[in-house]
Amino acid sequence: GMPSRKAATEGWTVEVESPMDRAERWARRMRQTGNEGAIQDKAKGYAWRAVMYKTSFDGLLQGTMGNSFKYNEPVWDMIKERIPVSLYFGILSAIITYSVCIPLGIVKAIRHKSVVDNISSVLIFLGYSVPGFALGAVLVVYLGARLEWFPLCGLTSADFADMGFWEQAADLLHHTVLPLICYVVSSFAITTMMMKNNLMDNLSSDYVRTAMAKGVSFKGAVIKHAFRNSFIPIASTLGSLISLIVAGSMLVEKVFDIQGFGMLSYQALMDKDYALIMGTLLLTSFLMVLGNLLSDIIVAAVDPRIKFE
Image (cartoon, rainbow, N blue to C red):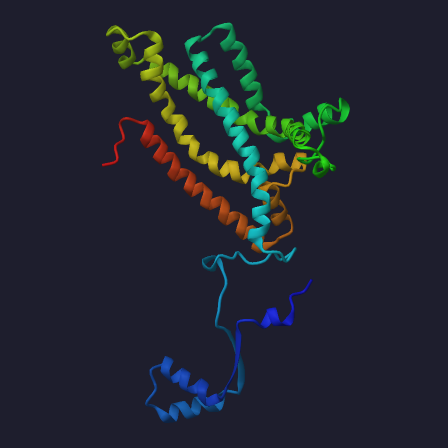
């Protein structure tokens, strides 16, 4: 509904200004305060007027992002509702990506050109070449609509509130599988190949040969020496994960009709809801800056060549 008149006038002050008040203000501005004649002349050209001004402000520094133009709800409340959904997917996909890709990259590097390496490479590049949202559409049609193995959209069923705890967990998991596959698919390939290629470069480098010549076992050389250095480039991507984790994927959320932060940003753009667009942009850009800062800190922690002194 429309804001009440009291709310609309809150914080505003109204004053009436005479032509003389205005002329004196003009004189102060133009440093003509001693020039009575000029002030009198200026006053003749002015009319009486009412001036409204606000004595109190609310904005970002006061902790409010304003109200959405379309829904007239506080922008921050709308964002706060959506963040847990994107966090849920973001954190899950980050855990899955790193816990699978790093060991897989190590195996691929050590067993280069073996059957395991070749088959996984084919699968990884297939995954990499398919965009997440396109894969999502295919999965929804085949596994959702035709085979009816998975629900088509949303994060929970309609009767979610009436279920017991384990039923709720199973329902959530059932709804999570397809979107999660789409989230993981693209980052999967990049992380695995980065790990493999970095490790292979490091394994063939002089310091690993030297370590092995000194009697360090191959396993020890891989884990103690090569792995740490191979992890440096991957550590530099960890920060950008933060913005991905919170912002989510607009396209994947759209395909599965999941009401996350990505979907909120999309709706804000579609509705030309400026207050909401500014809120979502502010949060996303803040997270990107924070992410870059974090990746620098992580790289410094992992990279023995960087010291904070």
